[in-house]
Image (cartoon, rainbow, N blue to C red):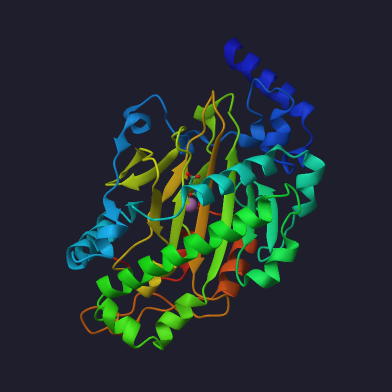
Length: 382
Ligand code: OGA
Ligand code: NI
């Protein structure tokens, strides 16, 4: 070992001595309170999984396709549906503008989440739980009971449906959190339903929006309306060695669609596009929306969930709010029968939440491995 390497290893070990293993479970914000200058070994990814910030991969920015809700709800819907379908097939991601959610609701949500992460650790830790379906769960990393290497993120996850059942379990501090999440979850939920209807129409599963309104009893839509919703506030403290770790490792989201409010000032979200990692450029007053695994299954592989990850920053902390939507907790997710035929055979097994939760509890997360486990046939690249 070269003298430089020996000295580096010694420094890393010294940092590690300061931090006993159970301390990592208290989260990165707690860890940073110690004024770290080096990344503890627990967070150092194997060389091949690191983000390569100094190469082109770290510097390529991408503007996502834009979907305009006003256009989708207006006379040019047919055209907007084509753009939506193209974005879902080519990127698995799009930028949603003119969403109509009051900026007050958005700002209140961001402010409440920020205040939550500023609470003393003892207050935040009341909500730590291993139960993946708890109404509220505070934690760190990606799947902290399974991850060998931890990632540089703390989170609070709030189940939002049905509101009256979950609300009493949500944090009572900061005082404004409950109301802010109620407002924000209702607004994002109705935006999601608008998008879900458009997606069903773009897949040819319902004829026109008028059709949906007239046949309001459509079973499929009822299921969507009663769907589950999880709001996740992610906090990524500034990181002393951002080239050695990630805020969230490559993953796809499990649900039907995710509506993400990225930090408007600090970049960090990267998606895999045409075989490389590209950084999504933040667009003010908009949502980043992405296809989740359940939509990939439901569309029988026509719209695929896309791998994404989060870079961390040496100077600034970053916060994002994700709203994950899918069918009700007890529903079975399966390829829509209308999208299965001789030319396009069924590509996925039926999937329910219980299977997903069992999988997460017993496997270390890697890329899209849960979805792979549900696959019946390999998808071509076409
Ligand atoms: C997520 C996620 C991206 C971000 O919460 O699943 O991918 O920018 N977040 O924080
Ligand atoms: Ni995600």
